[in-house]
Image: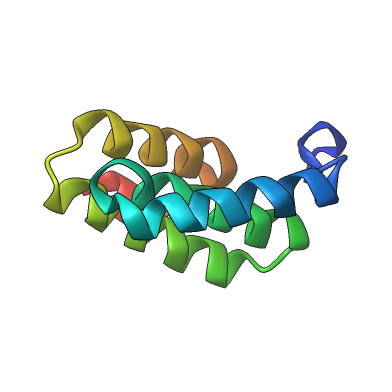
Length: 92
């Protein structure tokens, strides 16, 4: 893991994630996939790659279900950057 990708301000991330969670509950079409993407990145940053991959897949599925092409593309970019071609789901 690159040191530049480490979360430097975990309290700020926690605070912002709480806000995103509320927004995701109130407006899932706009915020749910964003909340899930940040959650996946938190798991990845902690080294829990299995949970991160699971959350990336869930986030991608939610963006896909809502026809959010930009959200789906963002998730795919994050997964590709973090896992390269090791993720079979990216290659489908």
